[in-house]
Image (cartoon, rainbow, N blue to C red; front, side, top):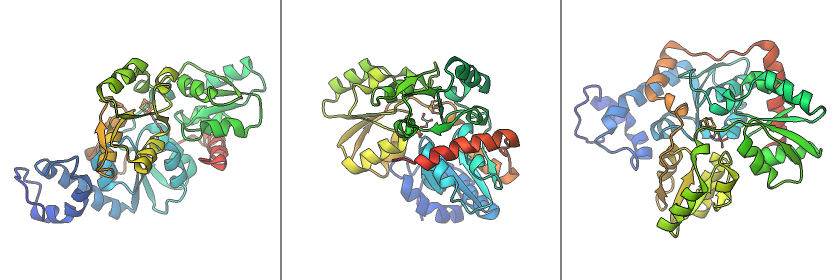
Length: 338
Ligand code: 13P
Ligand code: SF4
């Protein structure tokens, strides 16, 4: 049993014994002194999950207690969509933001999908509506619409196909046309335009986390840490991506660290990613950025427990929107990750 200085009365010897194996997965990021404050909620979530026949899908930006201690499936938004289809449990708890929970529901219409905090939004999803897509179609008649999966079901329903940062170039090129609209993330669209011959029409949507990073920050980082390997998410500005060693989805960055084991790495993205990778890559030193996504951070162990206890907040999608939105997501899944 884990011996700690414990002044949390909820951390009983039985909970300490039951949670000791999961503590092993996070001991590099959660101190022994802090674990008694995490363990009772972890223990409760694990129990509720069994009782409800639920699985927890966790995005790479979840905090390590969620990502490593209670989730069944972790990954980037493409992996979560792909794996959501294999779930056999009755209930899916989506630990991520609302569009991810909607995608899981689109792909599992007969299952109960819950999100621990329905206010967990996304600045990209907020940036565009179904009416905007219809307007863009009027401006560019006949040009196919590829929408980033970081959008509402209403927007997906107006689209030909979705994409994620992991497969955007592949999806764009799969259409076999000279010109596509790639909406709404302007930076992702410009980053794809830089590596394809397909002409890309953009929209002024931005990720409020990734738009804050600058090329000068990367240059300063390299000056301070000459041996650092810098990885970035394609929601960053093209000028930032020009300064980095690799750009890819959250899982793309995780795979890069696993496969290359750089001695020192900086991830230009949401900073929970580094926390999650520390425990699985002990030989790599992570230089952490401190950019948290306020929407992702709404998901906590406490509200996961509450959601499972009270079976709230269930994701529902209007049937006529759902069938069209599902088609756009399924069109993306046919293309895959490449
Ligand atoms: P990924 O698809 O790379 O996980 O990105 C999702 C996201 O919201 C990044 O900000
Ligand atoms: Fe949306 Fe940006 Fe948060 Fe990802 S990090 S969920 S794109 S606001």
